[in-house]
Image (cartoon, rainbow, N blue to C red; front, side):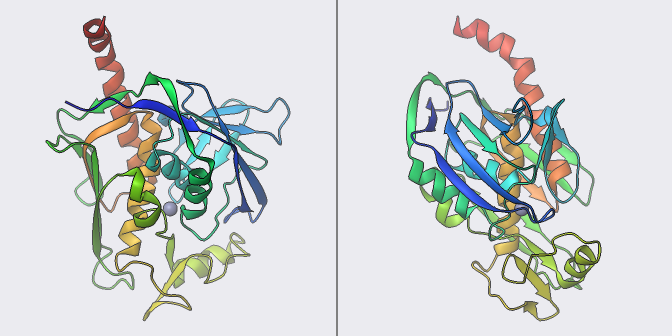
Length: 293
Ligand SMILES: [Zn+2]
């Protein structure tokens, strides 16, 4: 049903530097080419022994406002925008060297990562990408917050994010639907920025986090809309949540064919869906390998 694609890595190294939103710490990411079947690996070059952390759902630690991966010796935080850029650009194998734990916040979007990776170019590898077609619905969450994977007759992966914080929220209710395509990822999805309400922004800064972040570094919503800023898309908030969803879904480690629909889901539910999809693949692979032989 699905067309086969060869695995890809980047052709040249690429670097992105910035500061973590939460920690305010400077960090440089160096994206390196990696062999077939490596997947995405984060490597903490600031730590002794340069420990590596595999970007798979089983390694995530459930946190609400960002996606964190842990291994025995190390962790990396706020990886969702980096992962979204790699997945959105069909880069299957890559080593992401980092010299701090928290990924750079940049402008709150994935555009800096996407542009750096695009400039690095892609290189086709010998092995075929592992695909998974969603054959029956998978759903996580409750009546209010949920995310589900459903079968689709269309090729590729279509995602939909429904954002609705209610009539009293300063953040408008919008829905974004996108077919994931590498050729327009950098223009349509990557530029959508992180957002916060003014209330949440004040609360976070009172806790001493994100002290260097200004109204220009992400979108802060006051009662009358974005403060000292304007939206890049009418649906920028749901579009950003779609970006987060892609980054979290990428932890399933497979290319997915089907449709993912999310309603008010966050990193925890997205990560659980990624894990469920990965488990589905594990339970099917025995049969599939036999068919392929
Ligand atoms: Zn995000």
